[in-house]
Length: 248
Image (cartoon, rainbow, N blue to C red):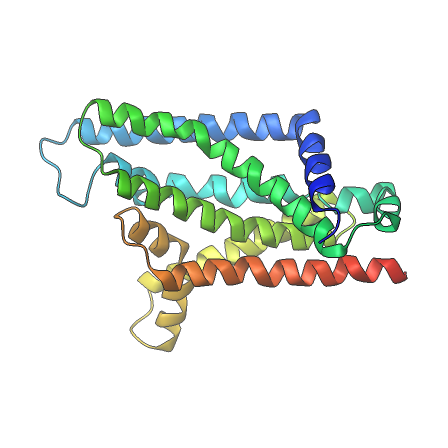
């Protein structure tokens, strides 16, 4: 995996010298700040809370407000990874450098994943605020963050693949968003379809179901396996696509 570290540093620098990452992080934190405010306001008016229902559980999986940022931000973070370099022609010098296709893909992907994780880091302050006014189960908090990172990792892998298959950032973002929204909508079938194979399939890929489980501290290894598959398959396709550019 030659060149991973160099590509990772290069891509991370490229993300933060442009306004894209800063605008994305600012918008994300504004939305999540509003999300937490609405959740906290709701529970402040509740005289009693059940054992598996509270502001932390609601923040990580109990409201629809968690999901739009995931479905929008991941395509935005990944749209330029390969598409812009192919459009501008800067991918050719990179591919002639002593780096492997896997090193290039993983370096770019990990830079996007690091940025995504960095965006979530300030939200820990919301949990600390909740802990100052009530008890917080930190195992549930850890499970919630694990879920958003696992789901985001899969969406970022899809975005990395669509960026490698496109020459336009807009096309890459649109394709990635459509794929992520499609998976999200497919998962909603868990709550609509009757019991059967179709219901089981929807339940297996349901992001909403995963977030609800993890937000209550229930870590299902089957869901983590699905997330890992959703990361591995798009990245494998991306490596093959990037490797083929050497022979064009």
